[in-house]
Length: 173
Image (cartoon, rainbow, N blue to C red):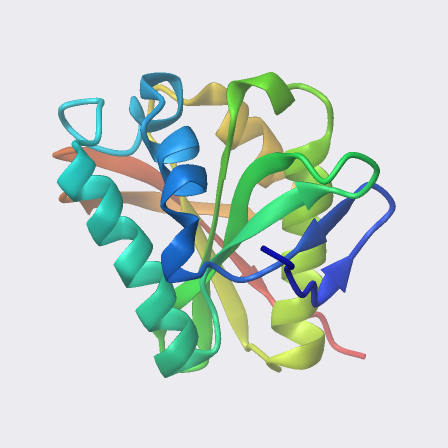
């Protein structure tokens, strides 16, 4: 399947989820190393994966955002996803899920930086929200490095835990 890409950086490119992306979705959300911090059970069932893919497609149709699939520019290999979902008013929640093969190589930083730019420059967002599982120290480090500020812990129903939460406001021009 030929894909269209709407954001490109030095090493990655962003596309949108399509119904025929089931295999990609399974390679990401079917991996317990990826999902262990996302849901209480630590794993997604086939039904959970299908629902997640459906939600991302619906978010794109309804809000023109999703946790977009990200691919390596040089190899076209699927890295994971990074993007936005509605939060409140003119603010969005940012998130990223990467396949373990791509951890620790700066891809999450590169992808999240591109999404932050998209949120503020294209969508004219007033602010961004992010949260992470309290056991996911890599996400904490990344959010702080990106410039997010800790705002407190917020209950996250899918995990049943209070997740450290962060905000980023649009910087004045």
